[in-house]
Image 1 (cartoon, rainbow, N blue to C red):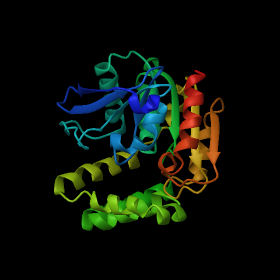
Image 2 (tube, one colour):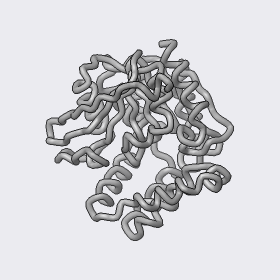
Image 3 (cartoon, rainbow, N blue to C red):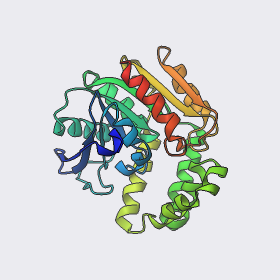
Image 4 (tube, rainbow, N blue to C red):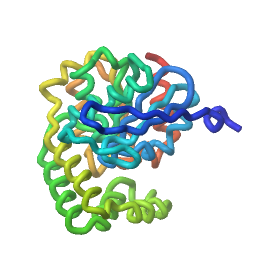
Length: 273
């Protein structure tokens, strides 16, 4: 049995002032690393990489408000609120500081947390994320929101087809089937996803980019169809002290399609902090 497989998992609940209860888990030993997923907001997003990261890090992951096992609470859903939720998780875990790995919308949340509470971050990994609004992101996510409200299964199908390289999803078709089966069918589930889309469309980190004074790693993929590489390059260019790695392939969900390469880069960087 590997060290990752035998790493004990501890469950915990974090409570926010507005009543949201966030369900989280901790596994592994070493420097703490908070994993923050993207639009989907689930801890499950990290299944392909969490065990490997737990070999060298103390990995904390959680379902974001209104997602999975976590309750919604009453506060408006904004990127800043989702960043404050990360602080609630760190507090519940008894951690004063941690590195944060944010993927896609999770990277926007990480940027917001760096502005709100930079003293809580040892380092920041911005994975497949962006800095500010663009025509492309506006057009893509406004369209996805409209599809979500009219046909959630089509929304889930299109999300999966654009998240992975075509050859990879062809060879791993069960991932597509699972995504469609998990489509947000209830009115409440669709409302939660729609408000999260509104939150990411409203995000603009350009005014606060100077707050990112901690070490930063920018990870991206050149074949990303959701957050195109030019937006990731723009983010890296705004952070002249950041380290940048762009994978030639992997699509938007490269933590899932290229887990070994992804976790190796993350573990090496966190270990060097």
